[in-house]
Amino acid sequence: VQLQASGGGLVQAGDSLRLSCAASGRAFSTYGLGWFRQAPGKEREFVASVSWSGGAAYYADSVKGRFTISRHNTKNTVHLQMHSLKPEDTAVYYCAADLKNSVGYYSTSRANRYDYWGQGTLVTVSS
Image (tube, helix red, strand yellow):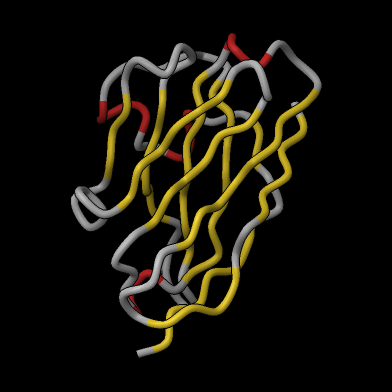
């Protein structure tokens, strides 16, 4: 599976941004997907995940109510719509594929459950 993330940029606090991740190499609708982020000097952290069907989604508490993950199985893409951005959202955002189709927040929020990772896209939120 190859993953290509895009859509990052420099925005102001309160703005919105939509990240996209295009996948190839394996039937897209057969695996779960997640977004993680890593801020400078910090560990990679879970942001959101979505099941293979799109029927289940999970979010980190820090983004719940502001971010929405969605997937389009006919277009082989997953999006992360981000609203009300804050300076603390500044990070490199990575999309990842979970071929094991983990279920539930506990499993899908663990980076070690994911098999493939994209290259990341930088989001910078200025105050």
